[in-house]
Image (cartoon, rainbow, N blue to C red; front, side, top):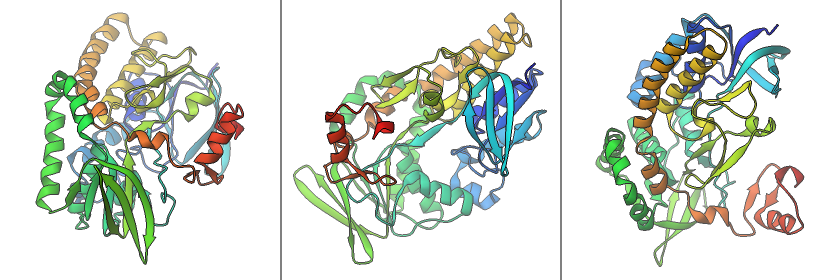
Amino acid sequence: MSDYDVAVIGAGPAGMAAATTAAGAGLRVLLLDEQGHPGGQIYRHVDAASEASRQRLGGDYAAGLTLTRALGASDLDYRRNSNVWRIDAGGDLCWSEQGTGRRARAERIVLATGAIERPVPIPGWTLPGVLGAGAAQILLKQHELAPTRAVLAGCGPLLYLVAAQLIAADRPPLALVETTSRNHALAAARHWRGALAGRALLMKGLGLLNVIRRAGVKRYRGAQNLRIETAGDDLRLHWQEDTRARQFDAGTVLLHQGVIPNVQASLALGLEHEWDARQRCLRPRVDDVGRTREERVRIAGDGAGIGGAKVAELAGRQVALQIAHELKALDAATLASQSASLHRAIARERAPRAFLDTLYAPDPALTNPPDETLVCRCEDVSAADIRRYAALGCSGPNQL
């Protein structure tokens, strides 16, 4: 006899939606999350943020309140500040909660571990004052702190969102240095139909760019070969723009090259993964309702492939409905009706994805950094070390 019907790991949009949907179907649900408040990264601290902070961070952030409030009203076992350290494909899982080890068994396990910011190993990325753009968002959301005299460098819609949020916090960035090139734009143009279908999302992006323009923030495009060094008390960002060498001094450099699925749990479980050529990352192999090759294990949200917060929420509901049907809590007709509606909504939200992924493809130089670049700061591993061990037949990072 299992302790729960469903155990959901992660309380971001996919995890909250999966947990509340499963609980609403009458299933016994366990929700585990390492944070003290629900929301994941995208809605981090949204239920505890001040109204002024929510307004500065924008309507898309405040929209997370709908999910957190639904979670609070649901009949389920929600464990905050819980770090999962073992997951078994047979349904057993172990976690630490407030310093105490705990264990439970579930008929189904839903991995809703979301996305992580893509590491950007360029020369100088380990210097004090160099952060990921996502880290700057955490400071804004959780502590209402904003970096001063910042330069944002890299590519992706999050750069524009963070810039607009810093402007709203009266800490406008000095500049945006974008690695998106003309070639990216030309390649993305082939996906114009999807861009047109998802024009509402693109209009949001244009709105952010308008905010940035009105604030007088400088934009540099087509940047290549980024590197950072110290310049007195400042940081100096260097890059190439066509044949011209450029540099910009700042107090903080915020790097970003998109987000990728957090696959640590799915890799540890030995699930099948595949290479996503467009997003240039590994992702778990799942079907359209989150099923993996392990019957008890499902994956929902950005952990199965980047789609954004709304897609993650819809996918969480879809995964939960399928589980409810398998566990005899939902009849086939209701499953078919509700799933069809979710499928259509997900397709609409995903429509501009190919356009965005192509336009904001990560800088190819990231996969071929100079030998002296430190790739792993914890273990002091350089790009040269990785190349040397790979030539010796090293099969992966664990063997390094």
